[in-house]
Length: 204
Image 1: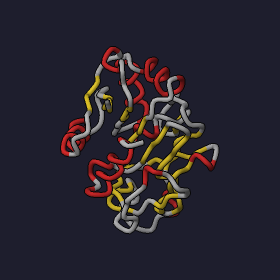
Image 2: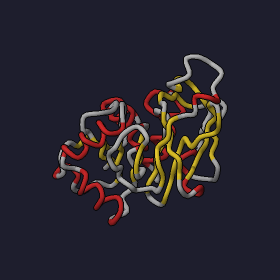
Image 3: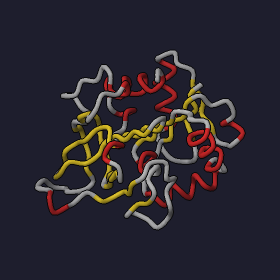
Image 4: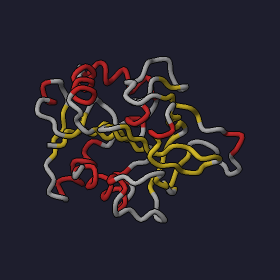
């Protein structure tokens, strides 16, 4: 069962709708008790880092998520701010992140951008895998994905960067360490490529 984590942020029902169309079992979870028996996890997120972390803490799911992800090795997919929360810290706020993947969240360097508006990075862009991984199987790389963000995940260990994109300079747009995955783009807004990413995650 795929558990979509509802702590107050993200396009929760969009993910649920996609999985139902794919005939893949999923459920929306809102409490620690709801997480029992989770086989896979989706951690969505929108908005700013500290607000997201405060809501997750308040939900009571932070501690059981650490148990599931770090000790039971349950696969997890963080999306947008959900991916950024997996870092240790963010330049956008003061709170500690989940620390599931070593690194910090940085703001995109405005000085390198020619087009306006400079931020956020919004619209379609390519995400190029840096190594073979089943999360990106069957993806039309030229079609790309839909992005909406002003910050990116700066991995402390370059091998945790799964894909990169260009916006002013190259930045990590997908991360992976063991059972932990994250994408900066929005699969639920990325048409066939996004559906394929969610399908691939379900099949990991």
